[in-house]
Image (tube, rainbow, N blue to C red; front, top):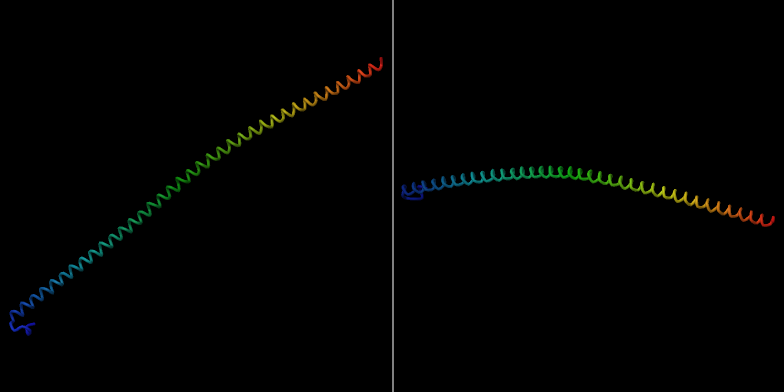
Length: 140
């Protein structure tokens, strides 16, 4: 540089200015590098926080699903128990109705049988009476 300028003071000033510029640029680059490094670290931290948040959210949802499954299983058992109770009640009611119907049919059968017997007896008695009357009439 000194050979370019005829004035050595001016050359020294230029060299000093260039060195300051180079040092300032190196400092700026170093600061830029530090900023980039800090930015990268911050992004990595944010990414880790995001992953941790994601994992905690997945865990929360898994716990929620498990509790909902248990609640639904309990509800299914309750409904199943209710249905079984209703089936037993209907079954008992049907058995009572069937017993009542069978009893009624037996009673009607007995009444019919008694009626048939009474009619048969009445027919036999009237037949015997008619024969006896006929016989007595002819014997006179």
